[in-house]
Image 1: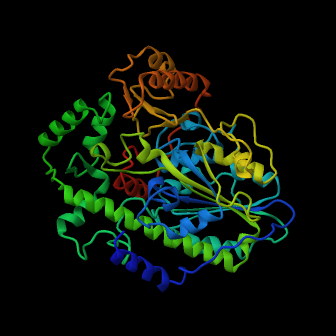
Image 2 (image 1 turned 60 degrees about the vertical axis):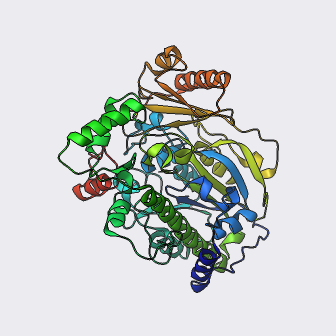
Image 3 (image 1 turned 90 degrees about the horizontal axis):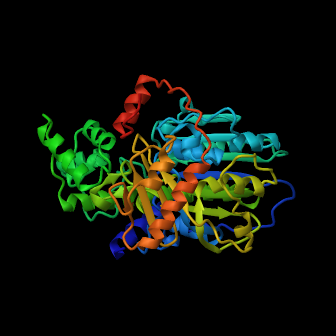
Length: 493
């Protein structure tokens, strides 16, 4: 980061009074700890300084990481907000909940994290930023109180509501609070000075403004006016990002009546820089939250878990979005866990982790027993410094009819496209498909033997999946449906 940008960021932090915030540790009180779970929507792991980013985008998260356990290789199970959080709260894979659609419906036979904590006497609350976490979608189950503010809002909107709730909790009972913001979700452009903080420009041209507004529509250097063409290609092509899929998209776009403007490489770089501004903005909101918690003395009695629900493609393979890939840009997310007594402060855990592991971890830290049937493993041993190898393979699924599953190991990745994970025949098809072949895509450098092992892991994983309840589609209010489609959730019905 240039000295000029560093000064700008430093001034922005000082002006709102959090640059010098210190978060100390103190002995935790007896009894179950309070728990705060913070979800940073669409937040790539590679933007966090504590995870190796050299540009100084996240000074507050980095300071928090010094007093936390940092998990370096964490992968989301879905690339959309709804199914990712449904998976998080049930510790089940998306297709076990109700497919990989934008609006999963949690089966009645599944217990959610707040439901379990509620049985142990926890007060439970959520303060979320609407959109895919609107209560009409069903993620509110088990919370005593669930408030959804402005759709696709920021921690700026939700954190004050969370702090207000904290000021009114019963001090004789522990609490579980879920806090969520879309700070790094598209559209990325944030208020001054963060929006253009890392861009090197002070104003935007009309073309750049249009490109940033339609960030999700940029593929292969062209900005598509709507998602109809992308959806058509995604659901009718074996691999949408393959040469055949790209050629089909170009033919359909050229034959449509709507203009498909080109996006220059300079403007594509601008999108990435504006996303980085959103990262810095999210980091400031997080720093403000920690300062308020410190002022209330809550960091002395609260476990704080910070995570990303999924990432975002920023030009990798020509893609700006998360629709057509299960690569690291859209599945590798941050996970930091801070204990009030300082346990594990500064520890880094490199073993493979899935977001489904968050629920059993929180339950163990709370002294609660995890329900039967969950898919996660507790990370509490790693937090305590005990031997922890992590998973051999982390699994992820595509959404919006993408028919994709991906297996990530420490040394490679294999992605299959062709049949949805809810299909009974998926295991047989994956086992029989040619490797290498058109249905498979391997991360560069993944050795043939490793690819074969990852394919075998896919087959085993598919065979272990519980049947999806296939709940009826959720009827969305028209205004929410339109807002979701505008943001790129193509199958908003």
